Every structure is written in structure tokens, then in C-alpha cells.
Image (cartoon, rainbow, N blue to C red; front, side, top):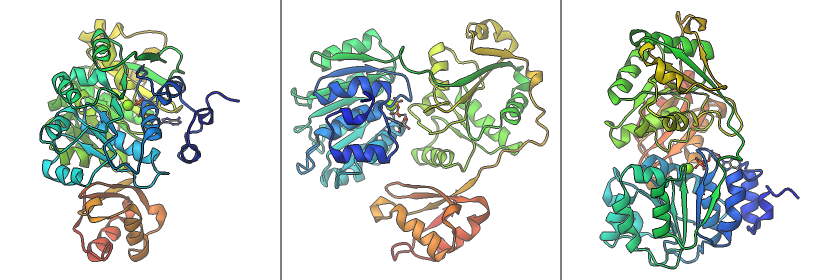
Length: 456
Ligand code: ADP
Ligand code: MG
């Protein structure tokens, strides 16, 4: 029997069927190493690179232990950012599909406090959130960890980087001593070991960094003078023709300006950076993920924890400051066995620093070998429609699909990704059909109710 099979684990038949349905045919290396131990109830400290399937490792673990009939918080997942928390919650919901009524709640800063209080009053089994906001709820007694069984630190290294240590220590004072604690991190530092010592008992350490199959990523470096960078970037797009691409800049001002300049060149780009309001970030991320915008310009902080599936290309518009940043950035492409492209630009005065990156797979090429950019455009496949109604209004993907394909007469193939949030929903609509979809949804009803609808 293949030891990578999920069915070698003590999992319920429903869980096995679900894993098969969502396309998880076999365990990733980190899942193979960690799941047997997690399911035995051991404390675990696990290190594996980005995109290796850590979420499902702890997700399957905590869901297997969950007693759905007991309507109490039994698992808490601490994350560094709200984007990551949203992604973790999404994956957990997917993994929990087979059990009815598992309630998963995200509690993050930057979101309104009041609605969170309301949701907490209704109860939850699993909480995913950022340390600061979780602590606030604990302090106000709106959240109780009395029945906690599993505590997870996801991207623990990032949480430390972001200075969450004090909040984490205070959160721990509310957690029962008898519990399973799982700690995930991309790097192993003294600080991480110190945290492990203080929050875990006889933790087993699992590492897959060396044994894991390497992502297939084509890595290329090009020299581009400062004044010529924009043109070189467009040439790169024209040469490699990525379907979707994240361009990293070192500053948020640069991110903003670059997005504007690309738009002037008929390359559809949006920027995500620390100055955006939560709803603006969300609008941008949704459009990028649902193929309504092919180019995302981001700073490292803004892109933390972001997991866009099938990202074809990453560009370092500026030379990253460290090897670690470089690896982290390019690790977003070429996931799950698909080949990715990672391009790095450097100015001639940075040549020394750039050469430090050079190795047998990182090839330095002449920018003259790139295609001419004349008239090159990048347009999205879809346009996003926003509906001012979400989970709170009991709007479901099926309702929107029904309203669009039934009343609005669109073919199912004209509709892309649907994202439902608390108060809003987003639907990707094929370019040519956007007016038709907008008109019909605006004038029609969803679940017998009228909602405001607009085009992003
Ligand atoms: P990490 O947290 O290690 O960076 P994620 O948990 O976000 O990685 O997983 C990366 C991607 O791999 C996700 O899109 C996830 O759905 C997918 N994935 C996880 N486990 C499996 C599996 N066993 N088989 C196939 N895909 C998987
Ligand atoms: Mg992760």
C-alpha cells in the first residue's frame, strides 16, 4: 500500500471521501510526516516551505477531534494576517464539508468589532484569527477558550516578525493547560524554539525542507536601468505572456505608481499595499484571484500569506533585500506541480548584490533578448460584479448562479468565480456579458430581495 495514501491514517470514511472529492489524492510530504503524529494527539513543531499543504495538515487534525454536538470553541488557529486567516478558514470549510453544521469563525483586526460579538454569541467550534483581535475578545469575555482542545500557530515566524509575541503570551493565559499545540513555521530560529518550549509539551519536530520535491520555477535575472524599468517589465510580459502575475516592489509608493503607469499602457494592474482600507484590499484581492485583473502589484507586507492558486509568474521589480525574501516571493509561483516563472530586475549599480543570487538555475539574461513591447496589452478574462448582500443575508453561490443563468439568461460558462463574504458577494462575469448581467441583477431579485449591484 502506498504510505502516502490518506487511507493509511485513522480518518473517518466521510473525511476520506471528501479529501478525494476535493482532489487531495495523496498526502504532501509535510502531511505524510506530521499527520500520523497530529492524529496521535502529539504536540508538534513543523517546518515546511510555503505551498506545501500545512493548512490541511493541522486542519485534518483538528477536524478529526472535533465534537460537533458540543457547541463550544474547540480549536483556535492564530495567524499573522487577516488574508491568511481568511484563507485558512476557507480551507477548513472545504475540509469540513462532509460534517454538517461545523461553525468556523474568523476574528481579525481591521474588521468591525460589533458583528464579531454577534457571531460569537451564536457560538462556534473553530476560531481562526489574528492575535490582537482574539485577545480583545478574550479580555471582553466575548470569547471563551475553556473547552479548547487544539491550538495552532500558523506561520509562527511571521507572527513573531510582526511583533505579536505579547498578544500571544496573553492569549495563552486564557487557554487550558491540557491541550494539543501545533506550531507551523517556514523557518526554524532560536526564537521559534523558545516559543515552542514555552507553549508546547514534549513537542516532536518535523521538517521536510530537504526531502520535498522542488517547485518547478524558471528563474531569470535582467538588468534594467531605473528609468527603463517600466518598459523592461512590459517587454517581460510580452515575452513570457503570463496569465496572472504578482509584481513585488520594495515600497508602497512604488507599488501605487507602477500600477498607474501600467494602466496607462493598457495593462490591467491593481496595487495592494498597507495604505488601503480593508474593503479596498478585499476588492483588489478578489479581482486578482477571480481573473478580473491579470497583474497585482504588491509590497511584501501586503502579500503576506496570500495563496493565489495557479500563479504563473512573479516579478521582483526591485532586487529583494534578502535571499529569504526572494525565496518567499518566488515560492508563490509554480505550485502544485505547475511550472512557474520568476523574474528579477536589477539596476546596473546593483550588479554586485544581484550576482550574490546567481547559481546554476538562476540565469542572468540580456534584456535585449526580450520581445518588443509595442502595442502589447493585458486584459482580464472577467469583470467583477459586486452584490451588496452576503452570508448575513443568507445569499449563497447557488442563488447568484440561479439569478444570473435563469432570469438574466447567461450561460453558466460566462460566469467565473463566486465569492461570498459577510455583507457582500463578488461574481466574475465574462467581459462581453457584464452589462447584461449587471442590468438583470440590478433590476431583478435574489432570494426575493432587491440588492444594490455594481461593477468593480
Ligand atoms: P502552506 O500553508 O504550507 O503554505 P497551503 O496549506 O496553503 O500551504 O497549501 C497550498 C496548496 O496546496 C493549497 O491550494 C491546498 O489546497 C493544496 N493542497 C494541500 N494539500 C494537498 C494535497 N494533499 N493534495 C493536493 N493539493 C493539496
Ligand atoms: Mg500556510
